[in-house]
Length: 300
Ligand code: NAP
Image 1 (cartoon, helix red, strand yellow):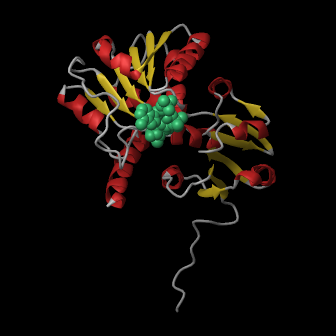
Image 2: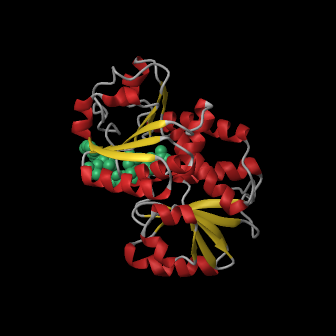
Image 3: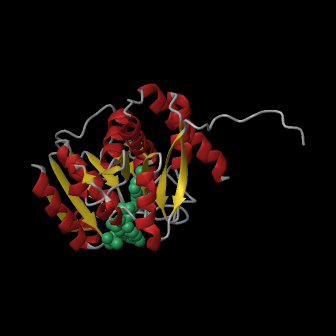
């Protein structure tokens, strides 16, 4: 075969970033970060690091001594990685989870950009802030925790956490009340449905996996008729783009958003931490549109 061209998108000067997790094959973070590097002119490549549990310590040691500028962290290491870091940012400490690590000449610093990703997504896609809002948070897992705590920090007036396992909702509401002035309370999802209190809220966020492919006929709430036109309904799921939950809300005239914005903005938050640059609004918007098209085409 004749060699036509030397590829030079990776050279001796290129720095490396990646995604730590197991599994990592499903992730679109490589596509997000490699596109960001090409758009912002940073000489970086981003690759998946699938690491087995017993190898986590060796992985961290290797990262510290190599020219890796940082990495994202996904399941199952968002908590375990914290024991290996030299410094943990205050918000990540409160959340008890790290999704972004920066390598500062061998010193590893942990951050969490999930809550920031959600807030930026709401602000950019609706033009409103969470200041003074009454928020209904469905779910009490990792995503709910990141969103609930960030919403409280950003001045939400009231946060109600409803969950299948009520004890977890109560625990999260308690933690939210410890860190900010938002009045947080909790309920079991079935009791909440009976109360028909949905009309009391400005923003509803589904943070559970209910409705995610292939479970597309399910919804965390089955009746949204008491929810008024113009209010905001967010689903952290982005497969499918429109869950049954969002379709119901759309019928009621609500402003609906899927989790793609949160995904992109948490990635941009991490990219900004590693590179020190500010990603423009134009690039963020363009990334959102392009990633939606990409996923639509690759999902088949
Ligand atoms: P997690 O910590 O495991 O929490 C899962 C939550 O979903 C819990 O509240 C759980 O309730 C609830 N749940 C699961 N199955 C349920 C069912 N059949 N009926 C009722 N409730 C159910 O997971 P996570 O990390 O928070 O992730 C949750 C979802 O958010 C996933 O779909 C994930 O892909 C998505 N996510 C999206 C982004 C983004 O950037 N868009 C970021 C993070 C996560 P119990 O406590 O009762 O078990």
